[in-house]
Image (cartoon, rainbow, N blue to C red):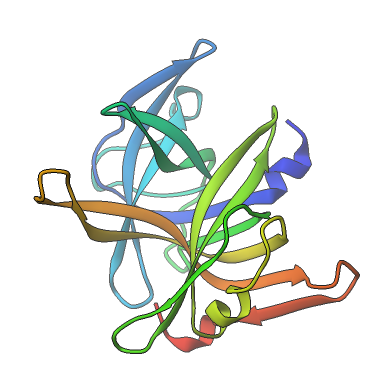
Length: 223
């Protein structure tokens, strides 16, 4: 794989294994397993995130329930067929396991370099909080792309609400899990979990020149 594609999508996570890995699928003779990792926020809350790992990385790594691990990887998407409908699924794909460091101050770091592939959706909450939803296409090797939902807040939301489809943008922040209610065809409600990149910092070339414009909202205390 071209090394540039690895730089487009970088994730670092450190947390506690929720359940032991379970077998997921095989690709070109290589088996892959899935598990969930509980990653603490600075606020004391926890994000429980899906992780996919190759069987070739698992020997010598303890992944039992309650094990504390650190990893580097990529935030990836894939389509899953459910009830004859294609559903976008998200997972952190492990590229390597790292030494666990109790002193690490930020256990959840992600940086994506991609392209806006849908018009941003800007809105305000009943408490007048500004939010903007983005969908970022991040190139991967072998002519593939990952489609990553991102959510911006405050000044960042205002900054990107008019960004055009096709704009190259670099986003850094953390991966979060979020519960929401989904209304089903029979009018019943189902609790589901969404995974997305909570934006901390945005950078892009506004005028297709060398001038980079940056907005950083990490000081707004939204964690």
